[in-house]
Image (cartoon, rainbow, N blue to C red; front, side, top):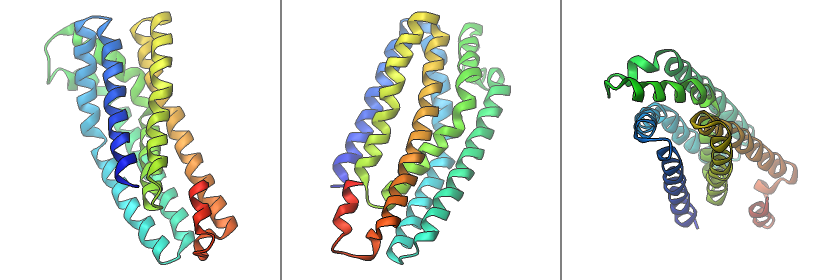
Length: 219
């Protein structure tokens, strides 16, 4: 029940990235190269947030087992704030220094310009990526892996059509705005979903009775 949605979520990420790559490729090889470099930089930048998510998963799982439900909310909120601030700080750094950082990987002025353009739009939405990671980890701590798949699917369900539409209207900058908007929407959606799930569980006292705990799966 855990491995299937987890595998499906990884598959959704791969398919989503493939679609975005295909879309960016229609604007030329330089645009695709700039996006490729930016994506690799992002992949490194999010590693500490992923580590914080793993720690959050552990804390929430332990406190659920100990029936310390107030700590579950506290752990989630503290981790969410920390991840948001950390990722937003990384985003600001990329926003300010992207030409220098991208030049480590390429000497092409055109590729650097595309990468800079990407970071000038998307980087300031990084904090919401952190919110999404922590919400997904929090759901995993509750043993609810299907919600993680829902969060991942929502991200690309917003990103792909929005990037297609805005890219058609405004060119490559429209694609970047589609990506940034999807990060913001998915981050807020994931956080609200988790907090609502936890609030409903607390209200119904589902953690305190094995007989009614089955209802938790429907929240």
